[in-house]
Length: 160
Image 1 (cartoon, helix red, strand yellow):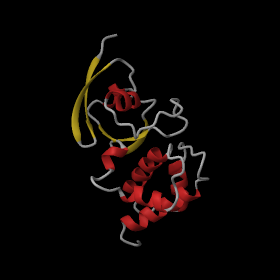
Image 2 (cartoon, one colour; image 1 turned 180 degrees about the horizontal axis):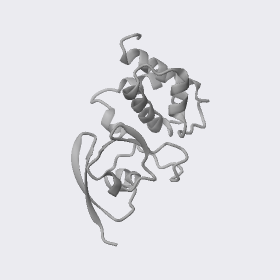
Image 3 (tube, helix red, strand yellow; image 1 turned 90 degrees about the horizontal axis):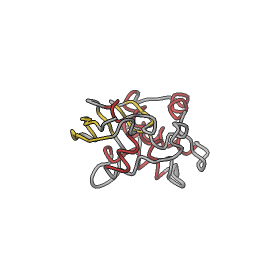
C-alpha cells in the first residue's frame, strides 16, 4: 500500500504529514514529529500512557491510525503546556506528589484535562471513572485523584 498525506490540526497548528498505512498517531508523534510526551508504554491500549485528545476526547494514540485523525484536532501534553510555565493541572500534579516515575503522567494529565473541560466540578467517582484505562504502578492513585480535585478548585477560582 502506498503512503498517504494526512492533514489535521496538532496543538493548534494545521499540519500535513506523509504516513504509511496504519501508522499510529503515537508513532507519528514520537518518531516523526519528536513530541515525546506521548509515551510508548504497552502499545496495546492497556496502560493509557499514550493518551492524547482528539477533538477534546481522550484517545489511546497507540491504537489510533493517523488516517483516522484526518481533519481532526489532536492535542498532546506539549499543546497544553504554556511557554514558560506549566498548565494548572501539571502544577497540582507536581505539588500533590501525583508524579513519581512520571511515565503515566502525560496520559493522566490529558485525561484530567478532558474531564475538567467537560465537567469543571467533577465528583470523586467521576474522577475515578475518568482515570479508568490509565495505569500507574507508583502512586496508588490517591495523589492523582487529589491533584485532579485541586485542579478543579483552582480552575474554578476556589482555592490556591
